[in-house]
Image (cartoon, rainbow, N blue to C red):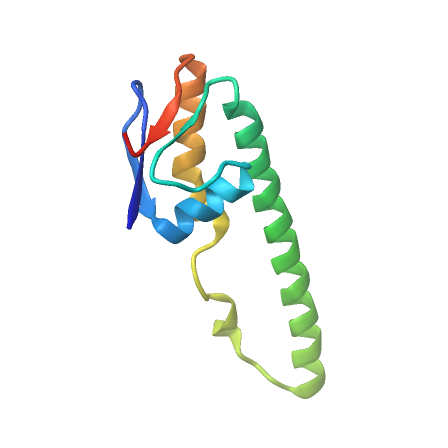
Length: 113
């Protein structure tokens, strides 16, 4: 299943179910076949997404630091271990941009309609 987020002033943003539902959870919206993020709700949604990005990046940095320290002690060198998956930042940026453009115009973002 795909989610397509639409507005009257910006291009559509389409994402997979897992990614869309993760972002909706972060902003406190229920996942579902249809929904809306009003222009009034957008600033809080953007702030929540940015905070989640910062939190995950800080946690990932701490984990890399811990793993690097452990690797130095054991002599392990697995430099490719940090290239797993796509970060929340990369998955959320198009959605954040959609929310910013749409809310600046006083419009809503909808999906499933």
